[in-house]
Length: 194
Image 1 (cartoon, rainbow, N blue to C red):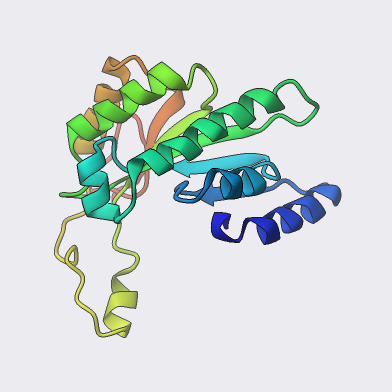
Image 2: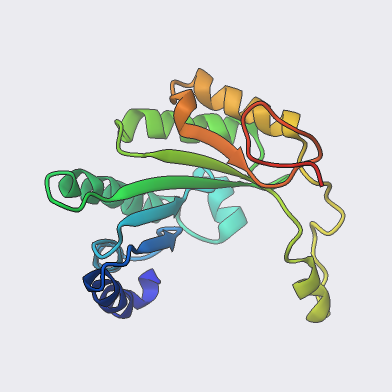
């Protein structure tokens, strides 16, 4: 959506004029101008922060963490600005928890420190999104191998431990939860045993 920011903004403006809420789902990997154009028309920004380590972020996504963080900081500015007007924006952070890629406690702690330091009450919710295999059929249909095909579903205890790490870094417990299906029930998440 951000790479086609002018079109996204036009759609958002028309939809909002009709009284319908808008949401921008983004990883923030775009120019500041593109991000601002798209995000200004959104009532809710769903922002993916995948990794707190620049080298690991580049290795896993092919993108520049500094570019993502520039968009994130712009999102924080837009939320703060919107709170002075009649239509405040909401900002949710989502971190996909992928085995061997983003499920490291140091990644989650690093992201928690970033949010605690910079978000200052501007992030309404942080979701740790449990790994799933919903794309396995697409890989098979395309005749492609998927390196995570044999990875197990996340365990609720693993996700609970990541939430505990987030809270230990100073992020409010009431503003973090994990989401998705797991191998067992949990104290924090919305997941269910399959």
